[in-house]
Image (cartoon, rainbow, N blue to C red):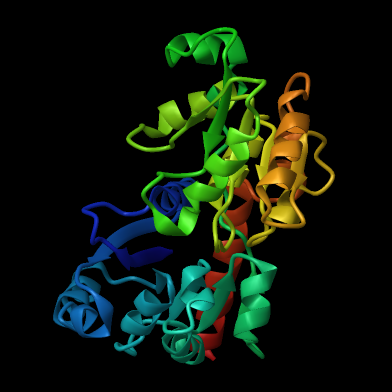
Length: 311
C-alpha cells in the first residue's frame, strides 16, 4: 500500500510525531512519501496545488494521509485519491480554523481524532475514529535517573521539573508553570525549558527529571505527556486535551482540577516525592498507543477506505 503524507513544512521539517508514525507504517510494509505544504492560510496552501498533483502523478499513492484540518482541506482539492485526515487539536479548538476543518471532514474519506474532547467538539456523524497518535517505545526510555543526569550534565542531587515546551510559546502558558514552581521555595527546584534539544536528549531529560509539568491553555493529545509516561517520569498537568484519560490510574501522575498555582505546587510536591519510575510505560501499551499498535489501526482505516472506493 502506498501512502502519501501531506503536512505543513513551514518550519523546514515535518513534526517529529508524524515522521515517527510514517516510520512505523513502513515497518508494517507500507510504502510512504511526503508532500510538505509551505505557505500560510488557505490562500498560501492553494499555491501548492499544482505541486501536489505532480507529486501524485509521480508517486501514485493509494491513499493520502493529511495531518491537521487545513492540510486535509487542501489535500481534498484533488479528487483522484481518497484522503484520510487526522485532526490534532488546534484545528478543532481554534474557532477560526474549525469551519475549514468541518469542510475537510465532509470531503475526507475518513477522519481521525486524537482526543475525545476534539471529537465531541467536531461532532462528526460518520467516517471517523478516535485514535491518539502513538509514540515509539525504546530502551533509551528505560535509562536510570542517575545515568540520565550524568549524560545531560545535571547535578546528581538537584531537583528538576521539566516544562512541557519552550517558555516563549504562548499556548504553553509558561507564566503559570513559573508561578507554581516559585511556591516551592523550600525545595530549591529548577524549571527546565524544553527547547533546543534533540529527540534523544528530550528522552534523557524525561528520565532525569523529578517531575514533568504541563500548563497549556489548549492541547489535543499531547505527545510529550505520552513520552514522559514512557520514561516513567511523574507528571503534573492541568486538565487539557486527553491528559486525564492518558494518566488515569498511573500512580505518581496528577491532573489539577483548577489552574491555580497553589494546587499545581501541591501536586508537584507529591510528584517529586514519588519513589522510582511510574508505570506510565505499561499504561501506554495497555491503552494501545505505541506506534506499532496505532499504525495497525491506521492500516485498517486505509484498507476500509480503499474497499469503499472500489465498490
